[in-house]
Length: 177
Image (tube, rainbow, N blue to C red; front, side, top):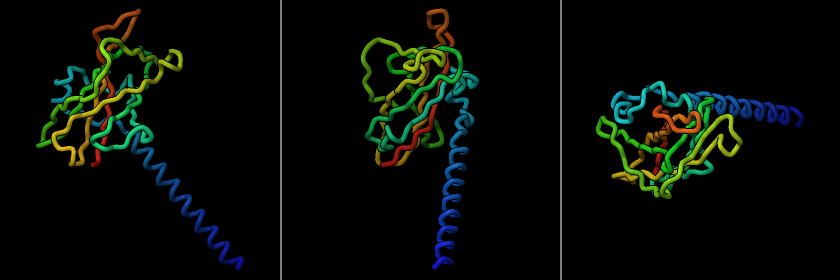
């Protein structure tokens, strides 16, 4: 009886270590959020590659998202540099899907209240360090699994006003019917 308990205990430890190792490797691979962005997208956005994902971090918490094409996508936007960033009421959202060997911009069905801006700052009070942004891409075929590349675009905010310097964060978000 004691021998079986020892074997079971050893098995539980090995399974636990395997689960921990798998989660660790997945978390490392999830940290790679700066793949090459095609020149065609950079020219469409009008933002240099050096300004993408350097001041902002976008995440899509599973607790806030269903990954269904008909549902709203909710993103957290976090300041990761000391620069303040100001966003328009729609967060400057631009969305693209890769179809027929090219990037195609898709419209945002999300409605936003008119006017207003959002200020994001790593050094500000907790309310301004992280924001929630929502988008709702209009897809030509919502019955097909697709990845939406979502960019949120803001301006650097300096000396109490928005500058002409644009910055952006992006995330690839999988939609599964």
